[in-house]
Every structure is written in structure tokens, then in C-alpha cells.
Image (cartoon, rainbow, N blue to C red; front, top):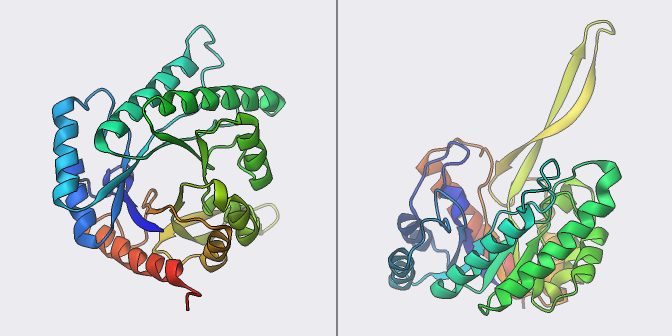
Length: 299
């Protein structure tokens, strides 16, 4: 398995310190990561901005820092746009993914990451599912033209449950469509990380890690002189300090034969704040714990 750092961690999207991609690649190398995943949108690697000169600089930067560019992370939602069906939202997103695959080929990256889609209406679930299946099948073929793997990350609502995720991949049924199974959503939803990691490992090209603590929330009801329970708030912490059972997850990955990329991301408000120093400290601590997870139970 290859520890990988995701550039979203230094993109400034949650108020954290922002680095451009060349500075990020150098940072990842300095922190000890062997590979990077690049965010496929502004302020990082946008298909509108990434000309040949830019891509060559990034390729040379990665080479000089001895860091592999593993994955380009696409941002898709194939259920969006139902109120404006005359707009070809799926076609635009497939074209976006195709451009990311072209960029990945130029950078030597092996994978383009996509999501499924968010829920639009409970009564539209079957239609949402069908739209996502057809779009991701088309994206798989588009990426294949550039010799790039398409990976589906279990993030959006459609097929978020583990059994549904497996069913979804089976429905896509394209040889270039692979799993990027992550433990975060299954852990939140109380699913068996060991079981599904082992089951999905043969189909996986990457997993993405973040760890969280649960902060309970309550709302006061003055008429009852009491509180009602609200969904807990999640706060990101270094790997190994949250509630995710990553030991069980990695045990399943190993027994299932996974040997791909393990990407770490800081993609939400982080305990300790948004300074570069805190990001660096968290990324470095998480890397050491990821290395231990990778080597656990080895003779």
C-alpha cells in the first residue's frame, strides 16, 4: 500500500492554509508521503486552467520531489439539474471527467476519482440510481481511452450503503470501473468495516482516510424543561484519534489483497485550527499511524 496525501488538505476550502500545487507537492514530499492526489478543480487543478506548460511544470515538480502523482480527484453529482432538464448536465460532467483523464495521462497519474449523486427526492431513487449508473459507465469508457482507471468513491447518497455500493458497481459493469472504498461513511452508518473492506479489496484501487470524533448536540425545549438529541457534529482529528475502527478496516483490506493507494485528507474543519503548522502536524502524525496500520500483523 502507498501512503498518499490529497491536495484538498491544503486548498483553503474550510479556511485552512492554502498552497498552490507545486508548493503542495513539495510539502507532501517534506512530510514523507510517497504519492499525491490532486484536486481536479480550482484553486488547484482545473480543466480550464491546466495547459500543457502547467502540466509539464507539475510533472517535473513531482519528479524532482520524488513523489508519484497517483490520482486526479473529480467532483461529480450525476443527479443534479433535474429542474432544468434541457441543460445537458450529465454530458458536461462526462466531458469534465474525460478532460481529467487526459490531464491524468499527461501527468502519469493512474486514476480519476468520481462520485455518484446526491438524493433529489425519495420517490426518485430508482431514477437517480439509473442516471448515475449510466453516467459512470460512460465515464469509465471515456477514461479508458486515455489508459486511466476510473474509481468510484462511496461519498454521495446514491449507493452509499455498502451492499448498495457493491450492487451499484455490479450494475455499472464496466471493466475500467473500480472501487475507491472508504471507511468514513460506513463507520458513521454503523456498518462492518472489516467485512466490507475484505469483500471490496479485490476491486479497489484506492482508499481515502480521515478520522473524526463525535460531538453530541442537543436542542433545548423550554416547554418540557428538557433537551432533544440532534445529529452529532463531527470534528476531524489525526488518524487513530477518532471513532473509526481503522485496525479492523486495514485487517480486511489485507486479507482481501488490497495493495493500492491510501490517501489521507483534511477535508473539513480540523481540531487545532487551520494554520499551516497544525495541518503539517496532523498530516505527519496521520502518516506515521497509516504506516503502522499498513504493517500491522506482519511477522
